[in-house]
Length: 194
Ligand SMILES: Cc1cc2nc3c(=O)[nH]c(=O)nc-3n(C[C@H](O)[C@H](O)[C@H](O)COP(=O)(O)O)c2cc1C
Image 1 (cartoon, rainbow, N blue to C red):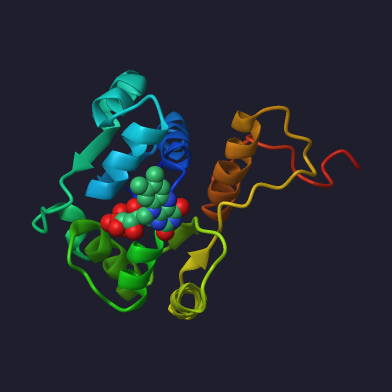
Image 2 (image 1 turned 90 degrees about the vertical axis):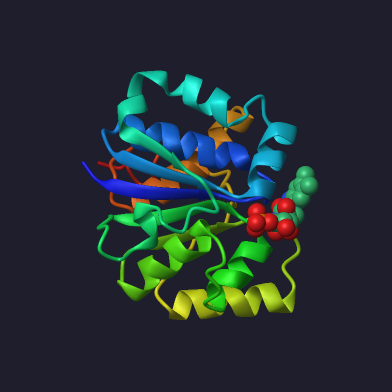
């Protein structure tokens, strides 16, 4: 059982973050959620959920989730002394990516990511934009050099997804794999060979 921070920003694909929260809770983890102001707006625009809706969806696990206010720099995740097993920003906008790559910690999401990097804890960034500009690519390289895992929202098709949910679960499964959390969200390549 681990303790993870999930950041959701205003990039397209809030549903990825919502599915990740569900799966982390389902596998008995404690989850600290930080959503940017744009993240909330895009979530309401793109999905059937606002944050209250997300809480209703995971009602049975509500004792293991804490939603933090983006402006609360006094929150536990703002300090390195609050030990976590890592942070996932999913989806990550180019704006937040640029802030973190340049050490800007102006809100709780940026500060929590900065803490993960300085404490050498796992930081998984799931960027969503297309095409990437040169500045986006430079920022991703900086983050990768600082120890973050850049795991783009790029679903594969070799597992033959039957629905959009399958494609979403592929990306969520890749994040769980990167965290070493067992999952069957997509069929792993090579597993039928034995
Ligand atoms: C519907 C919608 C979709 C967006 N999709 C993306 C996206 O995929 N990637 C991105 O970097 N920004 C996207 N943006 C722009 C960001 O929301 C914007 O840059 C915002 O300032 C990001 O703030 P945040 O990083 O604090 O969440 C989108 C905006 C809207 C309204």
